[in-house]
Image (cartoon, rainbow, N blue to C red; front, side, top):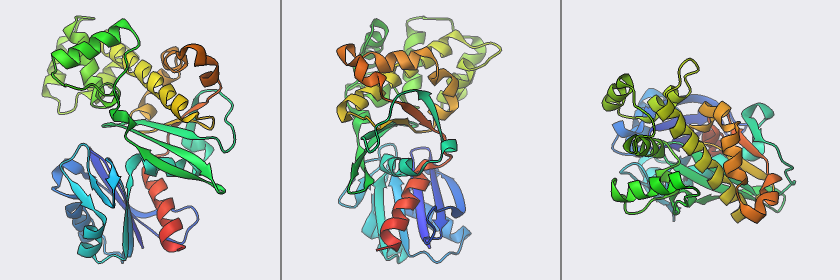
Length: 333
């Protein structure tokens, strides 16, 4: 059997797949809070205590760069090593993939119901494809068509310098440098689950709109401010202005960075938004703010106008992509 994992800063998913299926589906899947465990090995051991499957191979999508079979996770204090896991659990082979590489590997296999188009365009068959995924952090990857199929490549583009495009965003950058003492403002710091609270506290700092007492209390008690801010922004009965503007800034920045990647790759095959946040704010992404941010590319506006944008709504694209990889390379080799 094939063990597959999606290792994120917030959660870790582990599942077992029968490796002889063309479209792999998990036999069993478990979710673990990543912060509750000192290592991936500890989670694998807990999983094996719960489910006694005969595992021969494993593929893990990891939130962080993978170099020579080793990864230091970006938002967890873990070091993950292919050979160490193989030796400890007596596996024939272990493969580490960047988590966004895993998501990218799923894209060629997505069904229509696994994606939602939020910006029309004309995708060129076999054209490069870009992936931008705001979740706990901001992941990026891309696909290139070579020798009859798409090949996925990881990127750490989410950690590149944030480029403000208007006065409010310049103010945000200055706030993060001077008040938050970040030292370096990356796109992840303003376009992710990490970034949404940064935007919110900046807007609160400049008194952009009042903060209701109930919201201040909820945020003060919360371990993670992001879902509270997003829910308050999307409350159809009474959206909170401060939260709504936070989400508008986030969406505008996401649109701008998505088209940055489109230009760098000449992504004529399209841009896909992954991660945990986009599926939860589809109605906001489908509005003018994201599109305006995406199209604001000066004399290259005409080029990005032709590039379609989709949101991945498959429940576990990283698992799906990693399982597809494992089936292709470990089983058929």
